[in-house]
Image (tube, rainbow, N blue to C red; front, top):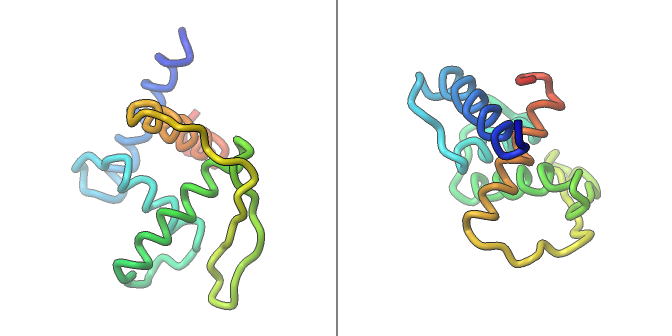
Length: 118
């Protein structure tokens, strides 16, 4: 099985699991899953977030997801418990489809690491 086929199978499995758990079966999209990862990384689950916070949560998730690829490095937690990252290497220019594949692969790797999928 090619890496692309394996990624698709794992991605579909992951979307199914997360959609059942967090969206009553309604299929979550890539942005919603990135947001969930941001909330997970922040660790403040029972809190209402403002619009700016939601954007920051997605930024946290993207940094965390791309950290193993060498693009970001965790720096510190601020006084409110929000993680901060520094850029280690700029992302190369990617087309929309390439960005999607990169993020899906990073998300699948993240949940493999967490043991949610295999």
